[in-house]
Image (cartoon, rainbow, N blue to C red; front, side):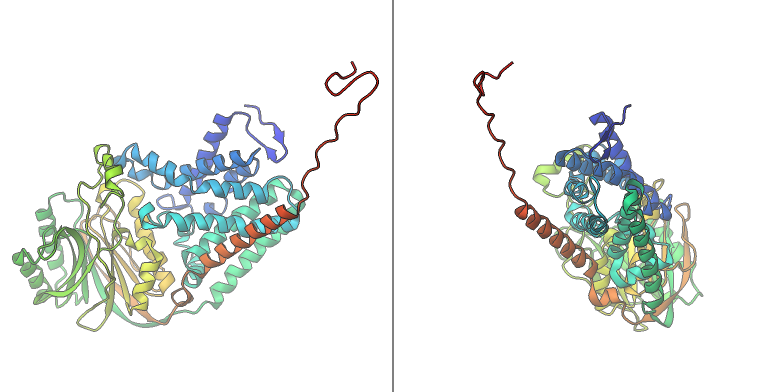
Length: 523
């Protein structure tokens, strides 16, 4: 394959090879996420794609490279959905990949050719801002939610977790892309190498300063929380019996709360008072409330809901949270009249679940306050932040990844708890039916061991509580607003520069001579 050098640098001679390279380059960052969890690779993973896009020979080619790179990224990060959605996952990835087309144009505009040092410094700001804008748009629940945000790959890196307490996962995404941009420019353009090395030093020093400066939460007591993970049991009644037996084994351990996973109860407790009574007896025996998750058709309103229900010694306490953000295609089909055919090619929802309308903070008998989330709601930074602002001292996510046991999905999902804990300064329990279950302290660090997908067990965790308010809880998504402002300023500057640029003068007509004319030139 011949690789000629053009005005913007090396470019692949075949459009097909170039397209394949863009898809592959876009997929590389997936290796930074669990299960491979090569967190360090995130700071280099975008370099091949950036080098490719900046070498695009035209704006159209840059947009195409960006689209294909985004498609590759979406496919790689969500590849475990293929057994459920089959070929439809390719369609979804290609549609979401379109969000990266403008980013490709942006990369070529600011990084293409031989930018000056000031232009390279601008690139280190606007290229990450453009990437973050894409992450923001695709984080809308209707487009699949914020799964695979680049900053989420840093879930076990302590300095990065401290950055999240200041600006959320968004701030870490900006840092990761900024480092990739600086490395790309340093590799491609020796003339800006010194400036880019200085940028990398500033990023490292800033991260270190935030690590030391960001306020630590004050530890304030603890809760003994038990997680019940029954394992892969397809039959709902058998799963309930197994959960019941595992919960009974906790007797004498003086727990404060027992958490069952998502869809741990398959029938409405109001319609099945016998099931409610069995859970209540467990609560009475343990001296602790039990947070179950009911996935069933409600008896008091139409439709199927997924609900976190707190059950005490006297039965359901009345504290209930109905899941608000549903999984597209898994729990409902967006625009079902248009996309309903997805049920014929995969395991899409035959009937849409119903949404809850408001977050809920539950109060335990000992006055501790718990903020429940269900399934992939743990991927949304704003939901946990809102619960903490409502007074939640402990975040609890009830989940089930039983359809994806042998994939990267359980580890990816479990890692999200670290992000939410670090952002909010509150501990988080991630309890699943089939693993991986995990618990994190207020700083995002692990508490105890993960319960793997092979385990059918109950485990007790001594969960530290904390008081105080992180900058992220106080100020919210300021990093997103700063990125959008940077993009707006850049676009305004580019527009002003285009207006100031003089229009090209038309070429002068050729002079007539005695022996020729414009139409009959002299030979």
